[in-house]
Length: 111
Image (tube, rainbow, N blue to C red):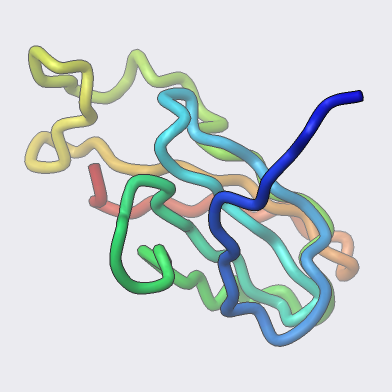
């Protein structure tokens, strides 16, 4: 048998979490919820609850799915460490689908 231990718990959604998606670098997770929001969590933050950003999605009901970094990352400028250069138009890109039958695309200037 394999032993597993809880490393950290993240709280912030007001209803069920319906989907998780990890960023390509593994440092962040996006969560979609029945509370009509998407949240981005930083897995490397040692203090606080790790919440980086909450999207008020515009969906009129549950957000069933979210995909992190869903668009072609080649369109973004990157620095020598591979991070998206927000000053040159990069940032986090997300796509979501909701119970309202809509697909939404989001962008932030966070690196």
